[in-house]
Image 1 (cartoon, rainbow, N blue to C red):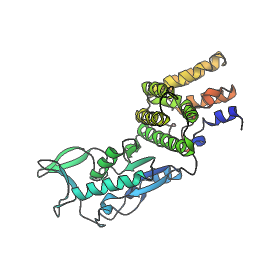
Image 2: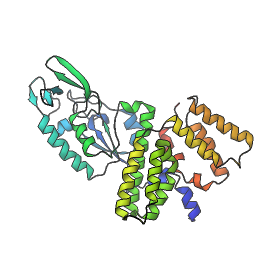
Image 3: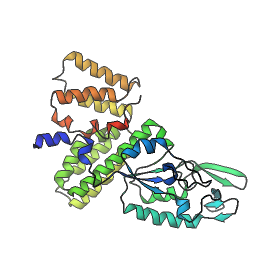
Image 4: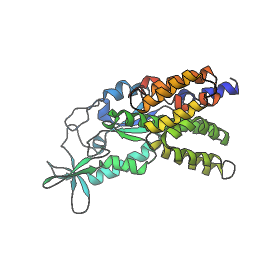
Length: 334
């Protein structure tokens, strides 16, 4: 393959992934249909199993089973006492706080050795819930602002890992951002596995420029300045700093306004090539997307057609246009 053809290939999500570094997600076991809930049931999530399951390798975890609670088992809740929050089974008053904390720390350390690309938690769970978990006192619900004990340890000890609740994934914007972060993390892991060098870092950053801009313009510029330090600071320090900035940028959710800016920037590469009428049609599509009238896939498709039509190599190499499998249809929603 020629160098020019290789650069174009870098614009495809598949060019940065390989079977040796599978997309691997941690997940609350019940979401996979495993009958491990307190009542002996499950909470199978059809989107995860029927759609995401075609692309991801699952690493199931049930913290309650992990600490030795049976199936079925007594209900557990978070309770506020004078000093802290405790994980207690109201029917027996047994306190599982220390046991869950110890298990969570050990399990997260174990999972880090598998180098997950993300994690999907069960909403509402006093162990796995990511947010808005009920905290009780002797009078009833006191507040709804806690995280489950296992989830809190996971997020605290692995801050770079993309983590979401299955309920929040019903929001199409949150879903797209989470999946983009997962695929981006896997691309970075693949790059490391293949052997990270200054040259490959430059190629990675170049291919991700528009994607980073769609998430965080300031972060995109910071990451670019880091790449400019290649050869001025030790490689290990450079790669560590870039990785941290990459994950920081991708945590910021892409918005319509940011996407519009990127789309208009890409169109600028064609301003001397496109007939006026075609340029107006693409601008109209970008405007309609920004107004919430059509999905992102429409202006993207128009731009992609002309990128290949006019052989605009820089844009052809941008992962922004193909960051994940089209079968996931993450950009097909208004």
